[in-house]
Amino acid sequence: MHQLNPMHNSRNAKAVNCDTDPTSSLKEMFIDMIQFPRALDGQCPVRRPVFSKQHGMVKATFVVNKELPTNRRIGVFKYDQLDAWVRFSSDTKSGLGDLKTTIGIGIKLFGVEGKKLLESESNALTADFILQNHDVFFVNTAKDMCEFTYAGVVLRDYDSYLKDHEDTAKILNEMQKLEPSVTTAIYGSCLPYAFGNDDYVKYKLVPINVPPGPPIPANNPGYLRDELKQRLIQGEVHLGFYLQFRTDDAKMPLDEAMVRWPENLSAPQLFATLILHQQDIDTPGQVAYGENLSYNPWHTLAEHKPIGSISDVRKVVYEEGARLRRDRNGIPLTEPHTTRK
Image 1: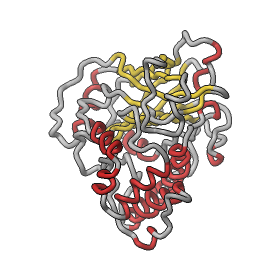
Image 2: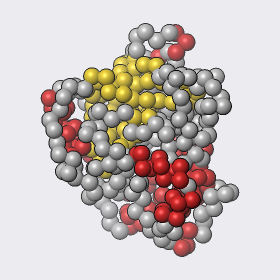
Image 3: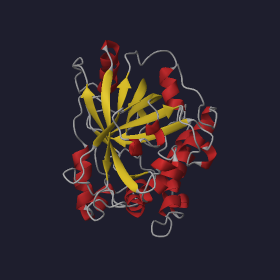
């Protein structure tokens, strides 16, 4: 279950209307009712409202597949390779254990030229991908996401909602799986993205060369971070970045995030390799660097525009959350123009 830290606030709850404005309503709940009160309570530094438990900030290189045909070399895939910083995290609070939490990965590419979709970041030289260790989302649309969040954050009653939405309960159950390492998990974008002007894709990240790492007991509350640290001290890790193209409009909908796109109709294709370099993730400043960066799927080129109502919500909520966090923590409100060495 996503750890939303439910908090009842009757004044703000009056502004929530999932039928008419799910985007503003979700911004109200995640930012005004969760993140901002934590800041007022003295949280220092102010953290993200979700996926706030960082497992590691990792220096990486995004190497584009040289065998891609010319018509696929668009957007970030027109480059041979790009520097990257990768943030692994779980959708839980830092004081709670890692076991069976939803794991997220944020990939920030550096050196990407061209106007970005976020107006406030139009001159940025970065582009982001965000994935999690499941291939479908637990609700279909922004309205559904709003109603789910309202049940937990305002009513503090997920159970009643889940009794009436068995498919959501089933997917949330599936998401509570044991992952021995953030480097051996399989990640999906869950949501679709444009690919140029005429195509749509989903992203998938798969381990393709992960040397054995030291066993870390899962009853250790921070085992995912400890395992990642020891594994990358020993050597580098390769993860394959795949694109699955939409080939059937009916079976691959754009705004039904619970629907799994069948891989027998469209096999994912290898577009790049994400190389996590050998390193110590506790190098001075590296943890703080991961906390200070923000990741937003709308930090990208038009060729990779996020699609669907849940993506539309992310644009607003992620940007507002980053603005609050950066302002409170004294961090520049713009994207970095150079990568950390």
